[in-house]
Amino acid sequence: MQRLCAHLRGVAVEGGKLGRMHTTPDRNRAEIVVDLDAIADNVATLKSRADCPLMAVVKADGYGHGLVPSARAAVRGGADTLGVTVIEEALALRRAGIGVPILAWLTGSGEDLTEALTQDVELSAASIWMLEEIAEAGQACGHVARVHLKVDTGLSRGGAHMSDWPDLVAAAAAAQEVGQLKVGGIWTHLAYADTPGHSTITAQLAAFDDAVRIAARDGLGDVPKHVANSAATLTLPDAHYDMVRPGIAVYGLDPMGGDPAAYGLRPAMTVQAAVTLVKRVPAGSGVSYGHEYTTSKPSTLALIPVGYADGVPRNATNVGPVWLAGARRTIAGRVCMDQFVVDVGDDPVQAGETAVLWGPGTAGEPTAQDWATALHTIHYELVSRVGGRLARRYLSSVPEEVPDPASRP
Image (cartoon, rainbow, N blue to C red; front, side, top):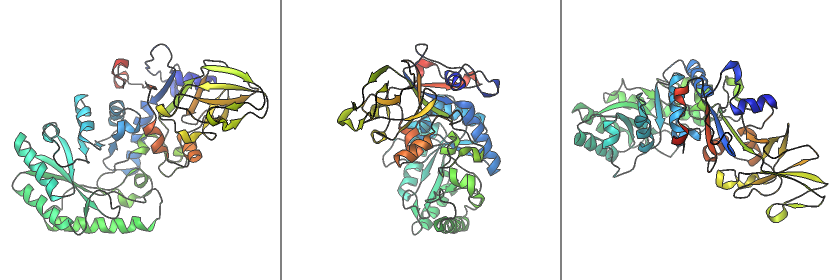
C-alpha cells in the first residue's frame, strides 16, 4: 500500500522516473491522476504492432485524460496524426502549439469551417453537400482543404451509404481536379471489431475494398485508407491498411474488456479521493439514502467525497469496488451526488487516507474494467465521464507535457 500511495502522490514512479505533479493545495480532496508516460508508451506499443502510421484519437478530452496533455504524450510516443470529433477540439490542439496533422470528423451543416481550414485541420465528408460546404469555405479563406471521404460499410451511423458512394467519389474527384480540395483519406468504422471473428468484420472489409476500387476507378487510387480502431489495431492486421487510429487503447485499456497487459498496454488513469470522515456504527445501521445497505454487525464507515456529480455512476450503489486500507471494498449503499460510503468492518481507517476507485491494478486496486464489469457497462464510459469537481494531476518524465495547474479545467 505504501508503494501505491507513493506512486499516486508522484513521489516515486516505476523505473526511477520522478514525475512532475501539481496539487492545490499540497493534496487534492479528490483527483484524477494521469500517467502521461503510460500514454506515450502505449502509442509506441500500438505503432510497433501495426507497423504503419498511427492516428491517436484524443477526442472527448482525451477520453477523460485531458485533451492537450494526452495529445502531446501521444505525439511523443510516435503518433503521426491526431483524431478528434469536433472542430473545437482540433483548434484547441492548434492553440496549444501542436503541429501534427489533425482530423476532425463530425461537422454539421452551416458550421464555420474557415478557421479550421486555415489551421490545417483536415475534415471528413460523407455527403455531397458537405463536400460543397468544405470547398466553399476553402475558397473563402484561400486554403485548399484536405478531406477524408467516409463510407458506411455496415455500421449504419456516419459515412455515405454504398449506394451513394459512387456519386460522392465522383464529386470529390471533380473538386480535386479543379483545385477546390484535396482528398486526404478514405475511411470507415467497424461495428464489431471488439468481437474478433464476428461475421460483420469480413463483410465490412469486403465492402470497404469495393469502395476503394470505386474510388480508384475515378482517380483516387493513391489516397491513404484507414479502418482500424483500437480493437482492430490489436487483433486484425488485415484492417490496418495505410494507417491505424486507436482510441481507448492509447490510454491503456483493452477494447475487448480483457487484461491490457496481454498487449503490452498499461492504464494511464487513477481516480482517487481522500476519506473525509470515519465513524463507528452499530449493527443494523441503515446507510445512505433509502437504506439500501444495512450493517450486519458493528462496523466502521468511511465517507468518500465523490458522487454522481463527479461522474461516479449512481448505479455503482452496492457494487462499485474501492481500494481502501489495504483491501478491496464495495460501496455500501446508494451513491449520492457528492459522496458515498464504504464499510470497512473492523479494519483501521483514518480520515485523510486514500481511497482508490480505479487505477492500473498493479497494486491490488480495482481497474476501470473491474468497474465496468460490476456496473454492466464499458470502461470507455467510465473514464470519459469521470470529472466534475475532481482535480486532474499529471505524471510525466517530460515536464513540458504537464500543464500549469491554473490551466486545468
